[in-house]
Length: 202
Image 1 (cartoon, rainbow, N blue to C red):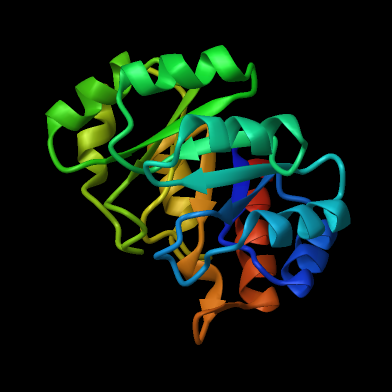
Image 2 (cartoon, rainbow, N blue to C red):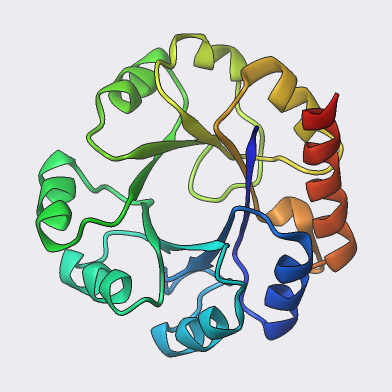
């Protein structure tokens, strides 16, 4: 069954909607330049309201490994998603600090990016068109992916079924595709989750 990640949540009402829809993952963005940025303190408060069966993923861009491990170990997040230039040495260093799952994001532009993703030492890889661009990349590049992956990049309630049929991802990851006027839209969130689950039930 394809899992669902609703990313970039930062308001209590977003958490309330997630608790009603029960995706497997939600995401908190800790990158200061993002309009979806949440502070560790805000994230901790939101996590307290989150249903315990939903995994909270922290999204980071070139953050100090020690800062990430602190948030993992104190329970603010359950998994770390690395969206910057973090290399294998960085991943090894983070693994020495925590045993929690690590996702490494790759911007997919050529076959070389897929080769790097296949060899990556993270627990999972996330394949995207860029750093939260909200656009779809050329899915044909994924024919050589050899491991479970989170699919991101321009997904929305209208195209996620096509993506699942074509690519069979481990999980689908959405942020801008469930927003209206730069805020999470509970109706779009519900439509996205319903589309994925309808596809899975066929």
